[in-house]
Image (tube, rainbow, N blue to C red; front, side, top):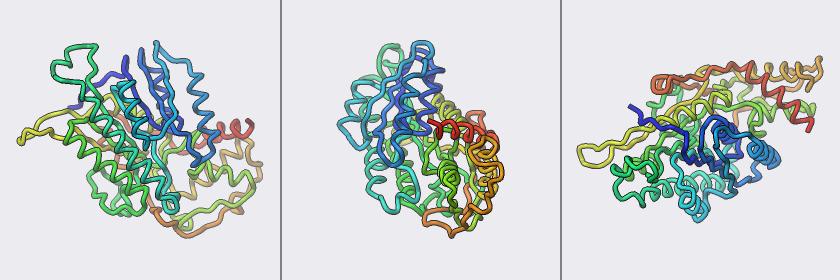
Length: 373
């Protein structure tokens, strides 16, 4: 039984708020909550074009909030412990959603420091800040009866990744599967996040939920991911590289479905309780959020080309076959991702459902406008 949390009249901290998923999540929080303070943080690093992050930030700043909810935006990095500690002391968040991370499987091969700093040290700083958010609560049970008393972080939701499944051959991937053999540093850091969160949930009774995202795509997405990267390459008239000679499948998940899943999970924290040893039974859960329908990469490429042609980004006679270069698998990649979403459906009554054609169509329409700016 989940502990129900209303998001109205709460302080909600979202890290990576100028990132792809963070942008959509903050926008929905602003427009759908009442009387809440949304604290967004981002370091605007240059892993990809900063102008896209700045665009997202401006869009959020211009969003008309609902019911008195407000946005406070701060620039800073997770690995800056003093910054994170000050933020928690000053803002006293009730719910924390940690989306900030150094992303990208291939980038981790040549830039390992970025992953250690952001994904490990940064996440540790978030966990420590959540832990110490309870320091001012002398009697939590009594405090629960006092509406205006801050009770510390009620729920930490954090982004994990389907990459933790590594080279698992059993599909679909279930949260109960062993994930002990990551094949990239990025995946290893995400698995480490799950282990760290579990230990903090056990030791300090912090309700923690990790979300394993599967190949998120959509408008205003990351330029390093296939959808955006392929679109850029094709519009330049160049060839795209399709790995594993096209023999790959991905569980493409539209960003609106991801955010809907995040919002539902935020409202249902794992319950606290005591074990036979008198210590907390860790209030801890993991969920997949994926489309539960892997698509062949070559089908994805053809759908993208067709939708870019339909919006006029590519000419009607564009020959996609002449713009494909089939190459071997890249280190750290896997041939298939496929989410078992039955646990998410059971606990939250939700399953992503946006089909690939509809999602790519929305991206193509946005991409045409983006290129015109």
